[in-house]
Image 1 (tube, rainbow, N blue to C red):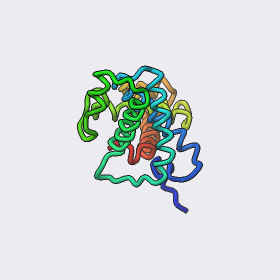
Image 2 (cartoon, rainbow, N blue to C red):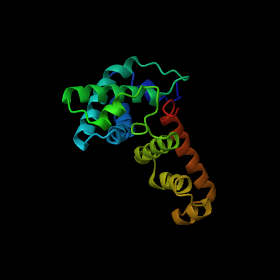
Image 3 (cartoon, helix red, strand yellow):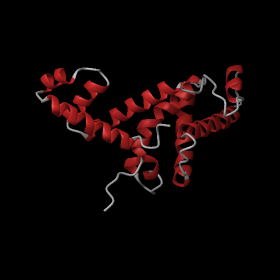
Image 4 (cartoon, one colour):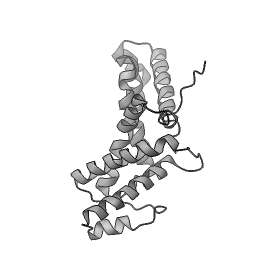
Length: 188
């Protein structure tokens, strides 16, 4: 029996895997929305763009082959930029700001469309932590969160949660191992 969890990108290749799609939506919709907002989209247009990108991804991800020499984020950004271009052409309301952003080559990093690497990684990891919260006992998840995100010492967490210090470290290891599995292939 194969016990190693398959990465989210691999799971999305399976038809009808609602759990994986839900996880993907929870992780990436805020990122796509923020890219659109930073490009100058109104809240309504940004929401429409997210829906359009998800529709494209439903068709494209089952045939997507992850290439470790390239970034998934770069591919997703390309899909998002192309959808943004189509949306702007449909609306026929380009402003100077929109034209400047849209006309930039995909290989360039227009500041209005791109998270800085640290911001992207931080955002995705924090989002994954939140999505995974219900997958663990509350004390297990909180022990990891308080230590990793809040920066609290293990001894303090152990006192607050009525655990041993070793239990805090074990909880942290379990959650981080799962986080690594969840984000396999998604953090470039």
